[in-house]
Image (cartoon, rainbow, N blue to C red; front, side, top):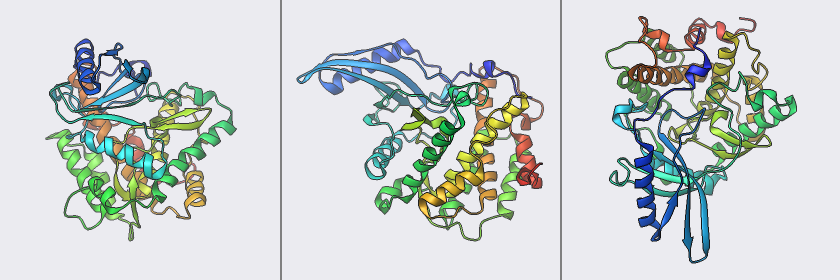
Length: 375
């Protein structure tokens, strides 16, 4: 049984002093813009975001054309003492991919404003982007527990689902150049993008958990090898963290597509399966608390049918990609839970598999019952 969502909402993600960061940010912006800049108090987002350190603030200054007021978000590489989720944070790549998908695919990534690779001004590299206003389905507590989406009429949720799938269709159908894709490609000796991606994820598992082994995840990686797609199909620019919790909506229509740190080059199904599985994860958490959640939302058949209508591409090998999504999520969440242990928010369990909230789903994937109706 997962712990109460109110407790989960208190996860600590930063060890930095916000007042000090505010002064350093004000000084940096003043130098960058060449005039005095006023910066509001900094805050962290509530409900979502557990990887990069995210700072929310307003900036104001007097420019030749008049007073400028800008709502902003800064993303920083996390401090090493904060038990980072990922081994590296290429903020320059994130900054560039947001600009690329905005300009080339018409995907509404936040407007990137400034990138600072020098760790001197703020203690770590960071970039600043424009902050928009809208509604984001929350992670903590999950939107399947209580949220504006849960209360919405079915036709509004259907519109949100269709337009969320359209983000993937638009992104995947854009013919990016090899020069645009090269910085996003996973390095390694594997012959295909999928092979390199899975190899990198296995290396990430080894890094994230060190000498602690999680047998369930290792069985899942073995399952992938036994069920490898005969033809992974064409590679596209993949969002990487394609889920509705990374989209801001107004009137159930996307106005901002967030969090591009996992962007890569991969088969189309990588994003589709992530979007489908992440909803199912939150749905199963709701079920564990005997809550109805949203059982008819983001179903694989509906998502894949909509995607095929929009792109002409028939998604394939979806069981493989859903298992891969479950494993990737398991590695990430086990790392996040280790950070909670580090900050004294929970004890280390005797069985490391208890770090994976959705371990029952992975078990059902391994025996095949996850995909059988009524199981």
